[in-house]
Length: 196
Image (spheres, rainbow, N blue to C red):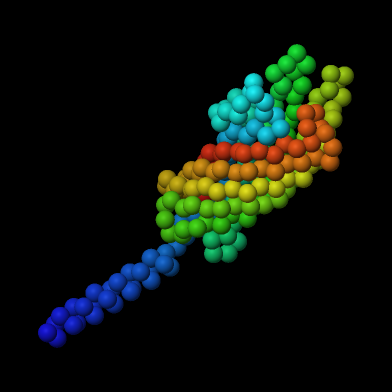
């Protein structure tokens, strides 16, 4: 009888130790990292019945970006991203725009110590809008940007990770710039990270 009590006590104590060690496991993503984003982004105001949103790379909605991710505290990270988006109108005029968003996000990892970590992110930034006019003159404008997203990071090896993110990117200019003053829309990104 005494042996059963000790066995139960041992099992209970072992369970407590194991659960505490799991809870304190080191965050596998807790390093500075560089990344490259590839995705699709088509602002809502650029959609029409003839051109529905397509989440696949094309000359109309391809988005690429470079990012730096730095740990702040616990599961919080600061993500700085510089992106590139090109859109050309499918018409005789062939008007086009280049958007260069610069974003500063807080990224919160929901799970630490796992090779798969879901997260949420939110942040603000600015955007440089660029247009080449037919007369050869450049037209540049600055806009206000904010975003909210969620996704998963997958640790492949000690230094390589992949991320998949769904993000709503709010982007507004003070007045109409090329096509509209509001380039907000849903963005889907695939990110390749290198962890230092």
